[in-house]
Image 1 (tube, rainbow, N blue to C red):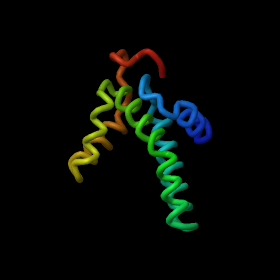
Image 2 (cartoon, rainbow, N blue to C red):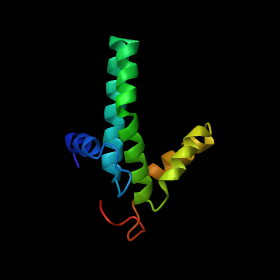
Image 3 (tube, rainbow, N blue to C red):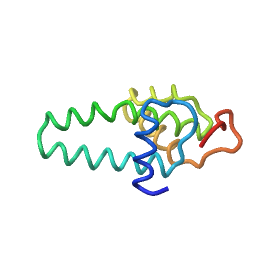
Image 4 (cartoon, rainbow, N blue to C red):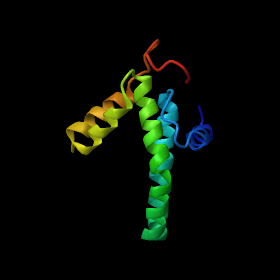
Length: 108
């Protein structure tokens, strides 16, 4: 999956928390949000805030779909609220290969 395809898919599945997201889809979208957030932060704090608000829901959705690909519930995204330990756990899970078959195998 390419950078552009990933962004297109993530925005087309804006609030879709069902299904699965491949590693490349998740990490390309993560890179896009990081770079765009940094660029918009250089423009102004208001623009950066608006961008962050605009990509909040698709970021949560792709995160939940990525966890589904590793056969975990999307609710594990709440680990993000546990500093350091929760972040490390989510990053480790995000870099793991998807599991086949799993209970979320309806779509990739």
